Structure formats: structure tokens, C-alpha cells
Length: 616
Image 1 (cartoon, rainbow, N blue to C red):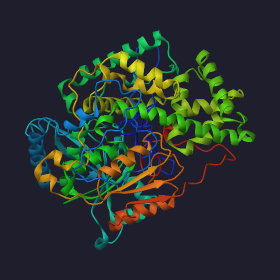
Image 2 (image 1 turned 90 degrees about the vertical axis):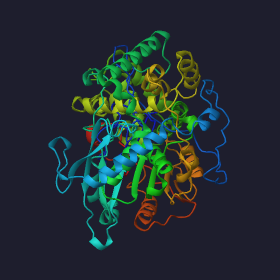
Image 3 (image 1 turned 45 degrees about the vertical axis):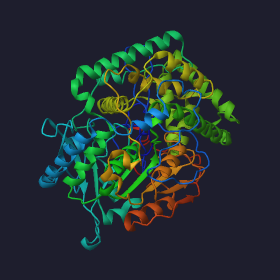
Image 4 (image 1 turned 90 degrees about the horizontal axis):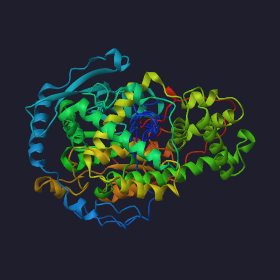
């Protein structure tokens, strides 16, 4: 799915220009994650041989909340949506709760964690490539490539840390953060310790970030040349022709060949299960008896997988902008639902622009604002702006409005300027940054490998074409871009895994089933498009004792550290004391953005928000 806002992308979410670009953007406007996360992303659909970008996402709007169920209960499959015609079924997902070979891998994790605890992490000055200044320090932790063979090949994960600022007597250990993706790096997370919204927590905790396997300098994955990945301008029709669809399939197949050629057999070991196992080794290497963790977007999914596999190792967990973890939704249905949710959020932006017609002159109704956008899209189809902004770059840039309200004014100004003979704001907003091409391609490669390896996908083009052609009739804005990002999974040569039945502790063994999971805190905005609200309710029901904090009538992806003081107080209280606000709590929406008197600077890199604290 397309992914994430302030931090990263949606677990399975979509990216735009780069996977990390769609992560959540902190309140400072500075992305925490350097690369895009899948739960928010940019899809590049062109007639060239360039492979599509990846995407990640979450589900539809949430139904009324059902009564909580016990941890051992088998989830009841929801009514099948119109696109549920492919072979994956809720029944098969539930009965396949435990991956084959899990017992062997579990022993491998135990051995790797024991070794990591003895070695620890040697933190030193960060390498120049990380662009992290003192007092932040960096180190590495060694993890098995294959946990079933813990004495075989190992890979190194890069880790960053800044020490807690408060008195030693009040310090509570390490707080590990992941911004989402799959494919986003959290290496920049320690920088947030100096920001006002995080200072109370930073006084008590060491802020620890890291790059998951495959990301950045942690055994990086690649599926094609960065220059080919970032090629622009490209096209992105909301209702593609048969010829365009054939090119889409050809590009997806070529992209898969590139992944196999560049990575070989190691490609099978980039999965959510391996990410969760790596997190357990990192915990041990940090010398923490139990883990305190904040995950955004996709980070909520593999954090929940960790909590299911290692409930006795959980101290406190915050899941910000929650991916729907239901096994039968990972990842194909999650992406379909995400496309629907983005359509609603796209309409929110258009209605806002219409209310400010006196400022932007783009139309007095959302239909007229849409007509202005379509006019720009047609014009760019004939002549790309600056030679690099085509219809795909336009769509990718405006997808950001679905991640973060901070993009509403810049997007409206860029569209108005372009239609009134000033293309420069649009070029600044939408043009790809060549300096980010390598990171973007890397993030997309990780996104693709993890999502394709994690779960079964429809294997025939006819299914994808039927489902998404029908969906695009009511949700044209993001549907086919999401297809472009995820289509390599239709042709993935490796046998897919079986999603873990999150929260079903008995699924991972009788000993684990007797361990109680401490209360965890969930954060979700009702109108989040990258990780729709239904996902938060699903995980809430799956984790007994969990507490759901809802930001009402809001849609920014990634809540912690943003402008909503109510949300931030709940997070601070939980992380500092362990207290939750009960089974659920609501916060009033953040103030609606107002047109600015002058153009505001774009978030760093001018890309989609990343999924880090503060939104999205």
C-alpha cells in the first residue's frame, strides 16, 4: 500500500517519489526518515522500461467498535468486499497462523539475542554518510540473515542513539523507534530529542533509531539503477488504456528480474517476521531486559508481530497510525482499501481549497477544484513542467495532501501558480530530487521484497485488472498508482509467507501463550488515508488491554509530536508512567490549516512526508 506520513509509510503502504518520502513528517516540517515508507509512496507509471515504485497502505473507514475479544479468540472474517474474488481467504489465513520452520527460527533468535547481549553495541561518532552530528552516536548490531541458520551468514544493522537528558535516577532505558515503510530508516530519530514536543520523553529515555535490514547501510537492497528508478517525466493515467496496462505488466516483470539478479537467494530473508526478530536482537544488544518501542505506520505492524512473538519482552509500545493486521488483509486487500481511503482524503483537500477560493482561485466547489487539477494534468500530459514534472509526478506530489495537512497550502499554491503561468512552485513541489534517487530506489526495493515475501498475492493479471478497474470507477485518484507499486508481487518468484495471526498468542507456542502482554497504546486519526482507521480498531480488538486514542475528524498520518496536545499528553503519560487512558480516549481535531500569507518552505527534500513523530 502507499505509505506514510510524518514518519514513514504504511506498513503495506504506498510511496511516491521515494518510499521514505511518504513517511510521516514531524511537526517541525523536517522528515525524520530519510527514505520513503511504503505505507505512503510515489508510484511512477510511465511508458518507459522503468519499474514502478512501491506502495503501502491501510484499510477503509472503521465500523462501530465491537466488544473486545480475548487474545486467544480466532478473528471472525469480515464481509468480503467486491474485490475479494482472488484465492486468498480469511479461513486459510487464520489456519496458517504459524509460519513453517518457526520453531527452528525461534531457537535462532534466542541464540542471536544471547550473543548480541554479550557483545553489546560499540557507539562512536556517526559516519559522515549518516549526516548525524554529536551528541548522537552510531553503532552496529549483527543479526543472522536466516534465523533458521543463526551460525551462518550475518548482516549488520546500523543503529543511532542519543542519551537521555534527565537525571540518571529518572532514566528508563532505551526507546526504539521505527518510522514505517517497509523501507524507511529511523536513523534520524535521535535528532527529535531536541524538539519541544519530545523533550519530556527524551529526558527519561535514550532515543534509539536504526535502519532495518535492507535499508540504508543495513545490508542494502536494490532492484534497479537509481537513475532508472527516478526517471522523469512519467505518466500516471487514472484510467489506463490496455496498451498502458501491458507496459505496466512488462515493467513489473522487469523489476522483479532486477531484484533477483541484484540480490540472489538473500532476497527471501527480507520479511516482517525477520524485522520482528531483528528487533528482539537489537533489544538484547542494547542491554534492555524488555523493549520500549514506538512504531509508526508499517512500524505498527511489525511491532504487533513482535508483541505476538515475544510478549514477555514487551515493556511499553506505542503504535502510531495503525496498519490493519488481519491476516487475510495482508497485503493485497490493505492496498485496495487504502486506495479508497485516499479518495476520501483527496476530497477533503478539494473542499478545503474551495472554501478558500478567494485565495487560490481554483473553484468554489470541490468539483471545480477537481476540474482545475484535471486541467493541469492534461496540460502536463502534453508538456511536462520544467521537462521533469509529468502526470505521475503531479499525482505523487498531490498524494502528499492525503498524508499531512501541512501540504494543503503548498499544493494549492503550486496548482494555482501553474494554471496562472507560473510553473516554478509546482516544479519545486513535484520534481524528483536526483540526490535522493539512491535512497528512494533502496526504500522501494525493501518495500517490494517485504510485502511480496510476507503473504500471498493474486498471481494472475486478470484478477488485478478486474479488481482495480472496478475500484478506479469510484476511487480513481490513487488506485492505479497503487497497482503500479505493488504489481511486482504478482510475478514474485519466491514462495510467499503466511501472515502471523497477530494477538493470537497460542499461535506461536504453548509457553508464549501463557505470557500476558502489557497494555499498549494505539494512536489513530479517523480520516487517515495511508492507514485507515479500521486498522486501528482491528488491532485494538486483537490486543487485550490495549488503549486506543482517536484524533477525531482529522486525517494527518502520524500523530505523536504533532500539534495536537491532547494526543501528545497521552503518549507522554504512557511512556513516562505506563498509564493508559483506559480502553479508549478521543481528542478533538487539530486546527484546520489556514492559507498562509506567503509560501512556506517545503519540508526537507520537497517530498512526501515521512513517517516519523509529529506528522504523518
